[in-house]
Amino acid sequence: MTVKIITDSTSDITNEITPELGITVVPLTVIFGHETFLDRVTITTDEFYHRLIYGAVWPTTTQPTPKAFADVYDNLATETEEILVITLSAKLSGTYQSAVSAKSLATKPCRVEVIDAQKVAMGLGLIVISAAKAAQNGATLDELVTLVQGAITRSHLIAYFDTLKYLAKGGRIGKAQGMLGSLLSIKPILTVKDGEVHPLTRVRSLSAGMDYIYNFVASFPQIESVAVEHTTIGDEANKLVECLSSLCPKENIYQSPVSPVIGTHSGPGALAITVLEAEKT
Image (cartoon, rainbow, N blue to C red; front, side, top):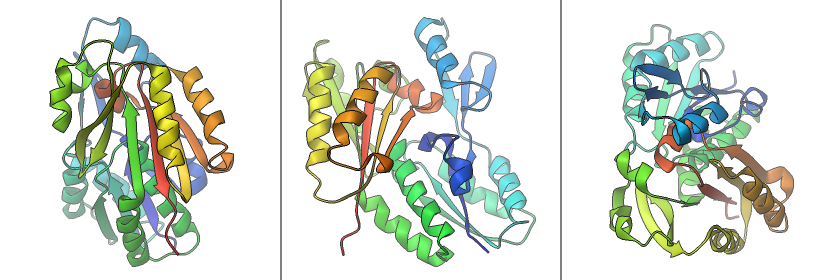
């Protein structure tokens, strides 16, 4: 039986890809006051960003419950004997712990392995996609665990932010705290290292940020895949994809909007890139 792959909605894998690769996504939750929404299930990205920019209520987020994961484990246990769960960084969310706790709640026999990817957004998503493709090609659960552990070291995410106020408000700013006092004209570029946010550099404009991102991708000699994400600047994301097609075949470039849960912390005007290095042979 094929190993089933589960991830969470912060992976930003689009709904077009998940059924094709057999990936099950467990959504996190976005909360606007007394209103609760499942990430990209009961609220779309467009609806979310409209409310984020124009609404009066500041959103918050929360992880899935252990029961939410356990229900998925039991459902997939009717189709397989082995499940691999790959979650966002445990330093950024309680999602990993929920997935682990769920193992004791599941009622149907099935081996479940849970891995903290130490990443978020498509830094997580490209790892999941790589694992799902390997699973479809017949990789065992143990082989997939080894693959994912290796891919974690090969996944590199950087993100341009128009503002850090959303990241600071949500308590996810990590080692980038020192950038909060920067002049408004200076735009930060951050990365995720050892599971938490770290500062990388500063640029003066989105255009300069896109140049930095392009050069970042160009610095890798061998690339398995690339992902381009944005919150509210789709045109710029499209331009970046076109530019990157000279560095990576277009079929290996994934593009998606940043999900509502991640958008709560990144805010509008953000642009992110993830490079998954090819395995060294």
